Image 1 (tube, helix red, strand yellow):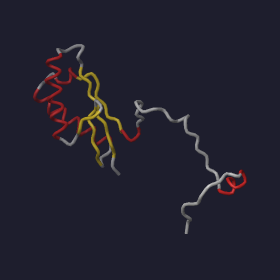
Image 2 (tube, one colour):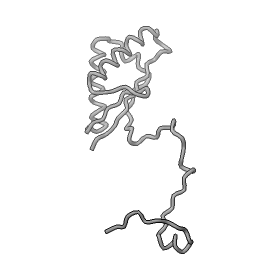
Image 3 (cartoon, rainbow, N blue to C red):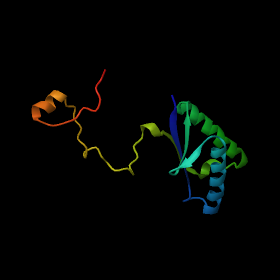
Image 4 (cartoon, rainbow, N blue to C red):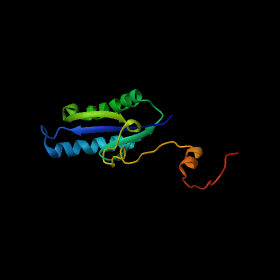
Length: 124
């Protein structure tokens, strides 16, 4: 089963110079892209057969590699978390939950109501 994960990393621009954050962001971007992630909608994403715990372990390992190059690396990270995109709602899309009312109705009920219809194919 394939999972679609999003990795969100927010740097601490409030407490670090933006130039340093920008350089560090480029290191993070390079590291993630070289290791199977793509970047979209402010998040790194990856489709994988791995579970969230395994992906989190892999990401921690990649971030530790950056930490080996820059000892104060973790102080630059404000937030870092993984979401399973398959279980998330994109709030930028319109809410259609109340705009479409779908009901199951049988052909017998349609006939009783006098609703005309045409059968395009019949089940064998």
